[in-house]
Amino acid sequence: MPLGLLYLFVSQEVVQPLARIALSKAEASAALGVSVDFFDEHVAHELRMVRRGRKRLIPVRELERWLDEQADLAGSAA
Image (cartoon, rainbow, N blue to C red; front, side):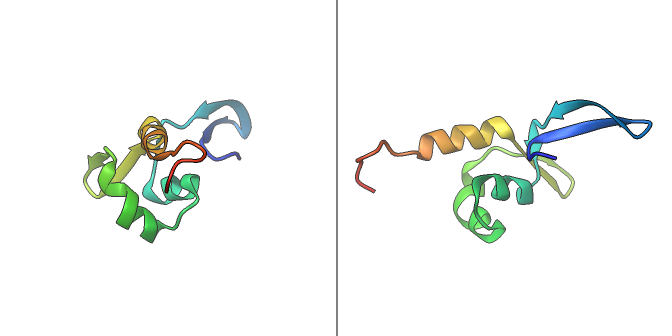
């Protein structure tokens, strides 16, 4: 299954793919291509998250927003 898609199963048949709208911390770090430790130290504190009990969900749009804000134009000083 591609990352970011959730498949709805009915009687062992895939009915339709459902786009994920939120990811766990491990999924979000994998989507960005970084370790969970790096994500915790450098990224998570800049993101809005859904918190329910111990569960933390990061909206995909929030990851995209953060990535857009962090992106430098080609040729910009690092």
